[in-house]
Length: 104
Image (cartoon, rainbow, N blue to C red; front, side, top):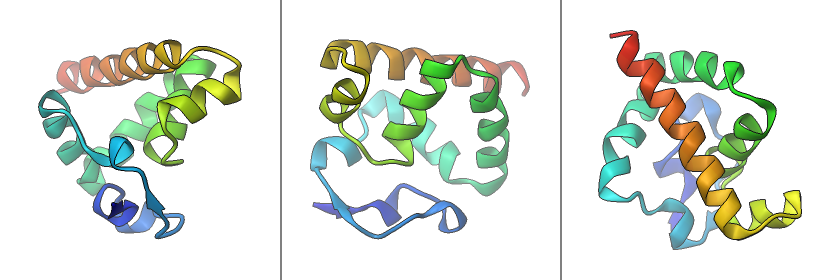
């Protein structure tokens, strides 16, 4: 198990509680995205893009990245399937990445 401190910038941390490995282990394709998120300036820009997302995309993205919840937990909150939570998260993440790439 790893601490959330390894994923969340200093100013954005809520607690140092330990979470499951599935919530913290980025896939190879996500590594660049996570590194960008850790950069403070990039984080501010990402927050602007998150703010522009639709309500469900925004909430799922924040629950996963800042709330440190598993896809199963997110699915339970919304009364949906785990697959729905994964798809919604990855769509939100891809929308943010597209906006980031469009602004560079």
